[in-house]
Image (cartoon, rainbow, N blue to C red; front, top):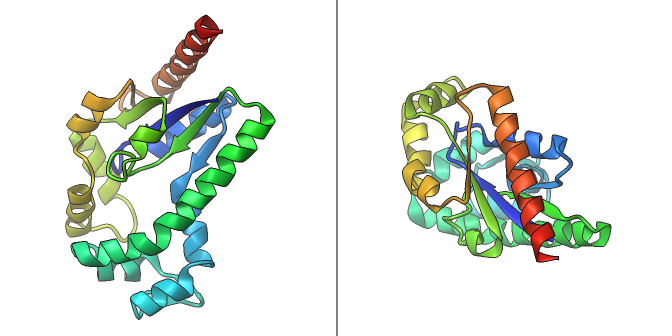
Length: 199
C-alpha cells in the first residue's frame, strides 16, 4: 500500500483537498478529526488535569485550551505528550484496516507532517498551497480567529515555501475547485502508473 502524506499550512485548503482525494476513492486518515474526537472524550479529563479550565461539559473547549497553550512551548509539549500517542494509535488502526481491504493508495492528512517527523513514514508528499494574502483572508474570516492567534499558529508550522520545496506534488487552491480536483486526479494517476511499472 502506497502512503501519501497530505499537508498544508492553516487556511491553504487542505481539508477541501482531502475531500477531493476521498471523492477519487482514496481513503483518508484525518488526524485533525481524530484530535476533535479525542478532545470530546478519551483525553478530556487528562487534559483538564494538565490544563485546569480547558474543558467544558466533559469535553475540551478548543478556544480555552488555545488560550492556555498557544505561544507557550512547554505547554505545547505537555499537550502533545497526551494527544500524540492517541493520534498515532488511531493512525495505526486506520492503516491496518486499509491493508486488510487491499487498498492501493491511502492518504494521511496530517497538518504537522514535517513538524512531527511523520514525513518519514510516507512514500510521497502532497502540499496544498495558496498565496499568503488568500491564506490570511481565509483564516481571519473564521470564527474566534484573531491576528495574534493566526500568527501564533503560523509560528508553529513549517513555512509554506519550505513545505513546497520538500513536496513531491503540489495542489494549488487559488485557481478554483475544478483546477484543484484536476491536480488531485493527476496525482493519483501518476502514482498508479508508478506502481504499475513496479509490478
